[in-house]
Length: 160
Image (cartoon, rainbow, N blue to C red; front, side):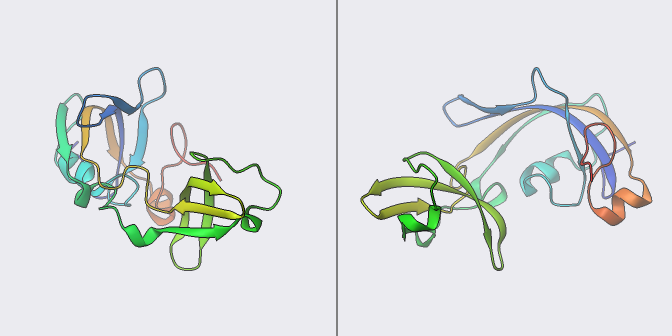
């Protein structure tokens, strides 16, 4: 079966930056299982996997516009230390924040100076070229429930 809309795909992958440093990998873990066409992986990787079958391997380089987007300097701003409550706040720490229209996103603390906390709401990989080495482990048709819920159920998938 070929990868296409509403197929459940399991992949082993290694993601590296342009210097070859490993950013993320499934090595030593279960394969990544996702519903193709649901927007749960980067658009560039999803497009590269389209039409491939179990057993195939590919190496793909994805620019920021098809990965996690370009960096947006407007997403770096200062907030009051009070916004974090009693939490310890140090540069490099990451918090999950809920936005009115943007849903959930990771916020990274850039600096802390007194009551001023500088945060960056860009995705940590925004602006970077992503290099994926991928092996397709399996491809199957999604169930009606997986299609309606827009995620995989069962092993390797999302659980309610």
